[in-house]
Length: 43
Image (cartoon, rainbow, N blue to C red):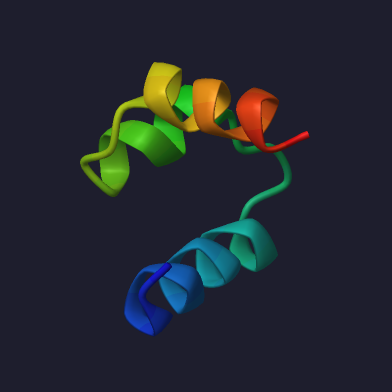
């Protein structure tokens, strides 16, 4: 993960009470489904 994307995600998480995965996926222009598939296959 690029450092700018990670710092952006951390910034949003610190500023807002609730953040959904779909919101972050849209905000950072990534596919939520692909991220979840990658997580499962890595386990």
